[in-house]
Length: 334
Image 1 (cartoon, one colour):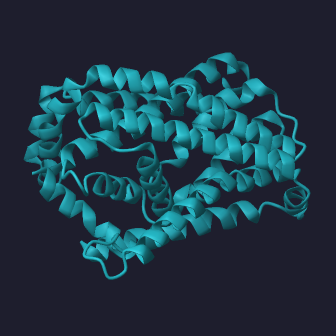
Image 2 (spheres, helix red, strand yellow):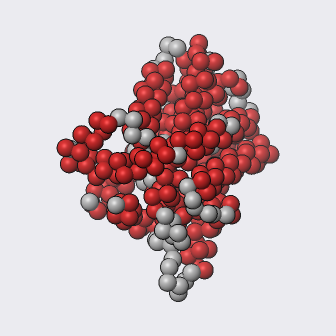
Image 3 (tube, helix red, strand yellow):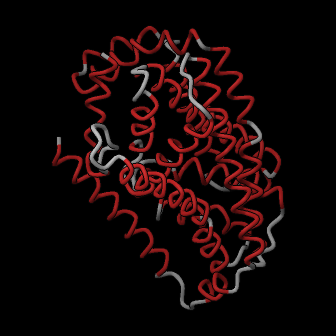
């Protein structure tokens, strides 16, 4: 298992580097570098404020979900845990930050199941809000994309999201039959244990989803400001589909922090709109500013906590050990 995890990391790094190399090799000039160097700082700073406002909204939603599940956590503590998770997600495989969040939230109360459910619901409602916005955006600007493969891809992703939701809430009794497959047995058993908790909190899910709906608008505003900082002219209605679609595809856990995959998505989605290649690539690179800022805040919290608890009995686990926590979490849920 350890060798498999190491090879997965190597593969994710290789995919990120390979995709970036293929994309950069398409450029015959360095105009994208000039665009980045001359980006309007005022727009970038305002975009970062908008990005952090989205983080604050997510933390508030997560805190509300946790409280509804019987976990008392202050907004300040929830913010710290959330940002540390964002930092870890930047450097480790997808899901590592969520595991860290679950462990930190349940550290004092030992409510492992409730903590796990709160993290899943926070991420799931965010994904569904993006999916809804992408669908609405595609309907608004369908003429620009009807001859592309994007409507079909969005339909497949949407179908997978709905099916996953039905499985998560235990809508299909046939899921239990998947236990005959040894590789899926532990996953199905975990779903059977936590499924009743999701169904019990259906009203909570709906409330969290409603709170999440404005969040994609903040992300769209973030990307629009970054485009303006690069003097790119892109109609506003285009962002309602392109931005949520790119974020959804970039979350597929095949690269480090979506690097490479995001650039490929940017090129594929914006090219039919006749946006200059150097502008597309520079916008994609600049869009990491929000993730980088969040990671730096999370890193400050993480390493400050590590230093502060030096010599204490309980300290945050090293980054190298986060990958080992799924087995511990699985045992706790059992």
